[in-house]
Length: 614
Image 1 (cartoon, rainbow, N blue to C red):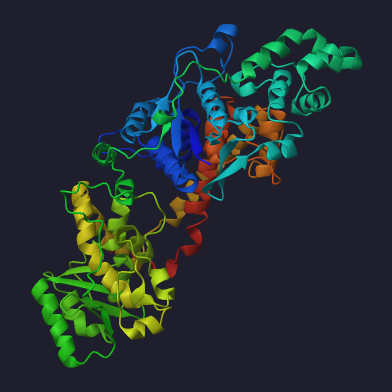
Image 2: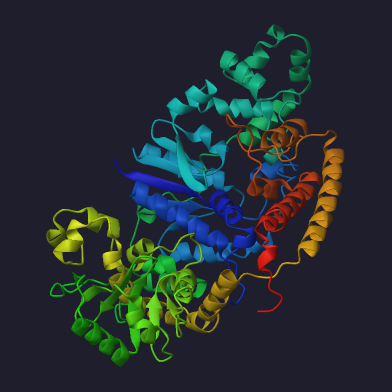
């Protein structure tokens, strides 16, 4: 069965924007915000890879009022306007989607939900497997035999998706997807300012619809209701019907429905490359191999079949001398160094040499004329200083280069760098049995390496050698080579010396700072308790969630078994709803400052080794 993927553009880009913001707010050198675009594309690429749709479309809202605003002028009246940082990214994203030949649909007077609904039902009528990607649960009413709603969720820092089908809706709500329209008519929707019947919440609404199926039948049998519930229903009949109308997605929006326009097509790669280069989306450029054919393809790093990379453990004096001569001649040394291992790669011999005595290369390390190309050179500085070797020209660290090219990940391991820039999976290689016969493997090593699969360091120096030119070219292409050479690499020695020598801390001043922070924390604590009307443990996620979302009725994500989420993204999204949120965000900042830089540093102060000068 062919598959149609429809994406709720506004919902997904909003999620991306608030998911990569604050200190992580991405922007280009000339100040163009890109975090929402980057996050949206990351989600899009993941879904394309997982679902492999035959047809694809993205729906967006427009600023103009919709039919619902004409019916009810207070519709979405409590919505805060789109932040400028996000609004500026919308046209760029649409430009990218156009270059990718992805069908973008938006219709004045209609919401993205109406476009989604119309396209989804059209796809279902063509017997397509339809998937709607959205963060909006309003789309649940569209679910049927052919239509699934896919909701992104963040769990343990990772974005996953949950699929909602007819079966799951019945399991979770006890009714059919279409019945959810009736439920919304009764309970309303605070986020869209749909009034519903005042005093009727989700539980009561669900029970009524389970029994009567529709609002019409509830009112046809109104005398079966009693007391306050009957009174609420009778007094707010018009609101119930109005709310049902407002909450019903229009599945007949006047848009062009043509499968040929929705078909997944090849990208205009040159145009996409041009935009990605401007936005510094280097990871995407590499991932999709977007460089022009006329340009050297620096992401294609196939090892020549005739090359044999061997490992040599028994290095005699003659070999040692030849290695040193090569390094001095080439004015560069490719090596891997840790507490137990020192391995040098020889480009001339295509061999990884294990060096037993690092002092044999003391003159190489201390030479200003020889560039040292290694991995985690901050740690290497300390290791060498401890051995009374004072290296110079330690100016190429593949981990720092990896960070310069993509600052959006947490670890820059050799495994990651090899996979990202050499298309080489070290783990897979070491675990494979028929190494020479593996079509996707690109390195043939000496048999000893094959036998000792757990010892990855055998090929680390080779990986460092292969990455050197590739990373340099990539940094030149995105104009970051100067940053790398003139700022980042010189700072490596500075940071290493700080770690090696230690830094002076005025303990009295630090304690005074802690006292000042604690006073501000106490003031904020009292202000938060006053604004919420009760005392509670602000550091308790459970108690804070109950106060914010049950007592104050602020907009919450779905409650889980462990309670409500109160992480920074949640609070940022609702800070316009109540003044206590700003206080909570400030409270958390000060608590983190105190725990990290006051309480965190004091135990490490060594007054015996105090140095007044350095």
